[in-house]
Image (cartoon, rainbow, N blue to C red; front, side, top):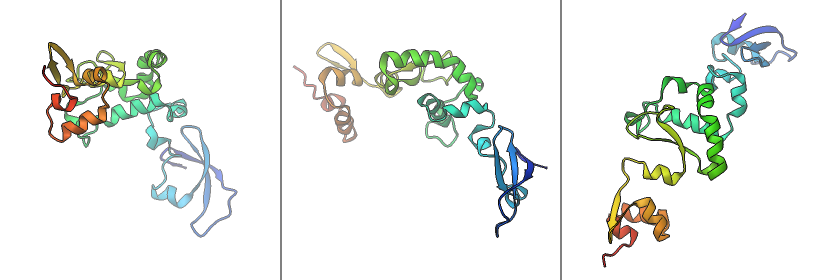
Length: 198
């Protein structure tokens, strides 16, 4: 007897409880566990949990679900959901909807970037923010690189020098949170940066 991803392979050693009888099942991913027979028959239980984590992933994939690399992939897919606020601007190529393919294309370059800049400063970035996520349009970048590449990035000219806000912040040594707080309060970019014309 099969219920979703689960196949009944024997009786449970658990005693029958008020909630019903238990049976031993093997999931298609290979895990073996005891399940409430009533939950199986009603369709409440369909897998060991792997189905909901992504039934198109190999079992080995789940060993990486706690890694930063996996979370970056999952975050990329999340931004492509219709209920995400930036959905209309973001798409992901069909190949990368499967983690194994994304890993095959991007893991080596991810490790190389981490070695240079650290794991916490390694983020996935689209070269052209008008296009979606794909191998030809993606790279690994620091948060500062990402900020320079946004559609809303502003360039400010001061005393003959033109830089984007992120670069002005680095040059002047001002806290980024302070500058963006000032911008939110209605200051101009120059005012927020404390730039005064000579």
